[in-house]
Every structure is written in C-alpha cells, then in structure tokens.
Length: 427
Image 1: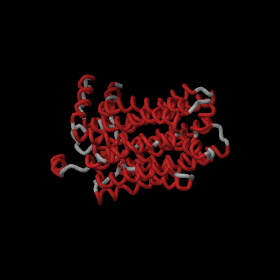
Image 2: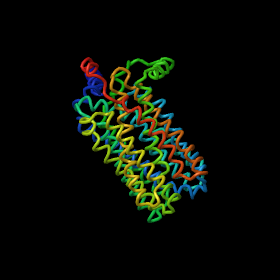
Image 3: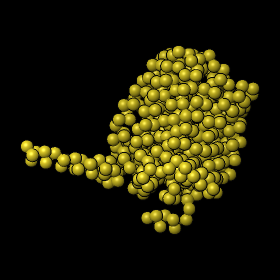
Image 4: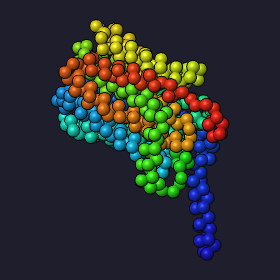
C-alpha cells in the first residue's frame, strides 16, 4: 500500500508540464492551420452577432419606441462596453494570455445577445443598451486578444494574416445580414433570432478555444504580477510616440467609416430612401460583402504596393462612397456608394493594428492604444450622428464621417513598415 501511495504523485508532475506547455503547443499541437481556423471562427462569429443586431435595429427601434436620437444613446452602450473591454483587454492578455481573454470575450458576446433579446422582447430600451454593453465588452477585449494571436501567427507562417482574419469578420457580417434579411422578411421575432445566434456563438467558443495557445500574449510580458500603476504608466507612455499617435488618427477615421455603416446603414436605407427594413438588411449585407472582399484581397495588395499607398487609396474610395450615399437621388447609385464605402473602409482597422505591432517590444500596449482610438470612434460616432441626423437626416449626418476619413487618409504614411533593421534585430 505504501508503494501505491508512492506512485500517486508521479502522474501529477507529468500532467503539469503538459498543461504548462503553451509555447511549444503553438508550434506542435495546435498547428498554424488549426490556430488560423480557430481565429477565423472567432472573427466570423463576432461579425455574425454584430450583423444580427444591426439588421434588426429597425425592428428593435419599433419595439422599444425609440426616436433616432434615443437609438443613438442605446447604440452608445455598445461603444461604451467596447471601450471598457479595450481598456482592460491588453492588461489581461499580458497577465493570463490571449486564449483566456478570447474565451471571456466570446462568452460576453453571447451573454450580450441574450440580454438584448430580453430587452427587445420587453420593449425596454435601457435593457437593450445594457446587453449592447456586454456585447461591446466582449468585442473590445476579444479584439486585443485575437489580434495578438493573429500577429503571433504571422510571425510563424511568415506572411500577412491579420487582414484575412478581419475578412472573416466581414464575411460573418455578410452572412448575418442575409440571415437578418430572411428574418425581417419572415417576421421572425427578434428575441428568437438573437437567442439562436447567442447559442451558436457559445457553442463555437468551446471548440475554438481548444485550438489556441495558452500563453501567446503572456510570453511577451513578465510572468509576475504587474502593478496597476506600472500598467497605466506603460499604457500612457505609448502616446508619447509620434508614429503611434499618427496611427491612432488613421484608425480613428477608418473605424468611424466602418462603425457608422454598421450602426446606421440599415436606418439610412429605411429613413433616407423610404425603403423597407428587408431592403436595409440586404444593402447592409452588400456592405459586409464589400468589406470581406477588400480584406481577403488586401494581403497581396499590401505586400505588393505597401501599406501607405493602399491605405491612401482606400480612404479615397471611402470618401467617394460616403458622398454617393449622401447625395444619391436613388438607391441604385447609393448601392454603388455602399460598394466603395465598404471597399474603402475594409483595410483601415487591420492595417493600423498590424502597424502598431511592428515593433515586438511593447506591441501589446501599442495595439491596445490604437484599438482604443478605433473604439473611441465607435463610442462618439453613434450619439453624434444620431443627434445630427435628428435635425438634418442621417444622409446629411454621414458627411461628418466623410470629413474625418479625409483627415485620417492624410496620415496614411504612418502605417508604412519601418526599416528592416528592427526586424533583423528581433529575429
């Protein structure tokens, strides 16, 4: 019996190294293919959930009896939650690893959908805003973790990956918008629609988390606990860098171009052109398809022509597209504008995040800071456009987005890759 007791401790040390083998697991157990599949699934589920909410905004507005200005405040809950998620996401990635933050973020997205469904069913706008806050928190914190995983994957495979991952998000947007189109056409109750997507997201989370490495983000930081004061100081120190500030301006405008379409495009179609909610969902699906096309095709273009020229061209396309949507006399020309809008806004956010992570030293803080600027646009954009749209209409309000995108395009040189010397030193 003593011998049996003596053998009991032996399996535990063997299991512990297996559990603490994340750095090796990234290269051996979860192959780059499986990691990319997991990240693609996470981005696609996030886009699907976002499109589900957006495609049902006209119905939710009617269920909650909200005005355009009130809907702006409700949508601000999404941006506020995103800002909180961005603020804490970088810190928790550094302390626990990206996989843990991805798990928490995806479950928060599913929970947010459930709460939004409850708010829509009860006709309670503040409850919808609370659900959007959970949804935004999951998207904000997951944004940091997923992009850290994506940058690590790029270093393994040796080519650009992040834009295509964001393309999966856009593909999820397109699929979600088409499902929203069918839901609107068949008068599917909003709570049933949202709960089905929440169940799908929660189920996919269990699979994708198992295919991600445990210590991806944590390996870039010290394993000891980081004091809160030091964390805040390190985050603020990033803003002293001119390049990071310029990248922040770029992502501010391009994220506003992307987010404003997500928040208001279906309502622009309904209120601005006098069409049905079903048509609004269809147009938004077209926008998502344009975004996905631009992101999947963006990798080769970026490798061939460079980040700065491609981003400058993208900003110009977005400006022309927004102008067409604003001034088009009919929906046909506006759809052309939606195409240019989607293609132009496609690469701004992923390219800015990739540029922020060029230097591996402090990459997590820079990615977090730049993402904060992007989500600041998501936070400020909805209420501002809502209040302006209350007076001049949504088609007139989006001209503000046009101006901001024009300014951000003038800073496109900031995303250019630095000289190869830092890369050689890092390698």
